[in-house]
Amino acid sequence: MIKIFCSLFFLVTFSYGQFSLTIDRIGGAKKAGEVNSIRVVLLHNGTAVNTIERKLPFDVPFPASYINGTTGIFVLSYPFDGFVEVYSSTGNKIWEQNFFKEMGPNYERTITVALGKNSISFLTSDVHLPNALVHKYTIDGAKQWETVLPFSMGYEIALSPDEQTIIAGSYFVLEDEVRQSSSMIDAQGIIMGNIDLLFRKAVFSDDDSFVALTTGNEIVLVSNESKKEIRRIRKQTSGIITDAIWNDNELIVQESNVITPNDGSFYYSNPVFISYSKELKELSRKTMDDVTFKSSSLRKVGTVIELNYEGKSSRIFDK
Image (tube, rainbow, N blue to C red; front, side, top):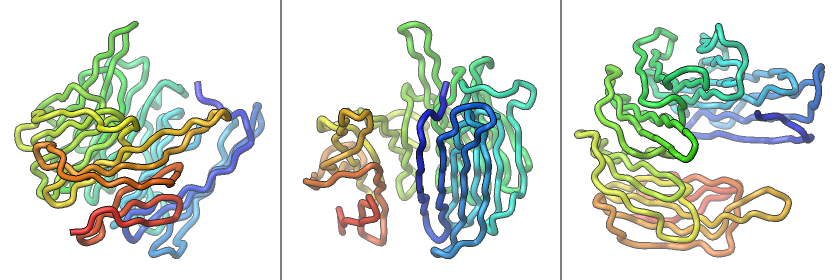
């Protein structure tokens, strides 16, 4: 069960392209009658377009947020209550959906989102249901299909740039046995293959012929045509895999050390950037020393791969 026990304030910015979200999460509620609050500001080229504010009961987690930086469409998802809200590029709500309407609140469920230009896919699961599901909708809220995944609990979901392939993770735990799958689903909702992996991130090559699936410890290369695993390798350092991005025919993987102070928090340091061929053969390696961050992201700008962290940008690879 997830609860908020201490006073906290978070400022989070999600930025991908022209549109972005700035999110203020203000907490501290500890008992019935007390509330936390969230303020979501939609920005276009850095200028505020609209603001959405919500009050949440003390025991309800903050919603997750997803935005398409090109179209400005964004989604707020509330797994505890089981519903999602979809907003336009002007910040106005255009539709909502409750996936667990008859079941009531539940902490042991998931709603993760893959948001494209033309479609939205939701991965949902509840501990009381036999299988996780993928639901595909048009941007304006028309349901297209629903697909049953192999296992009961959902994990992550990803969408290819052309929106023809969806990858969705599901798993099942029974005592010491863990069954897991990353299902490759076509545009009609048919599962074309299953990879023995629970991915954290999926990155499609520039020509959409390959997809690299990463966990904290492994990289798996999958053919987008055959939907089958081609090769699998493990991390190369003592850190964990924190990001990946394609740079033409090369896959750039970031591995970072995890620092855990005595206060129970954590952060990352001294990232290593490893360039791989499409066969996952190491081509080159670069390091950044004396760098720490809570979060970071790799971004491609022209021929340059940049690391963005703590409001800073550093050039990593340049062709």
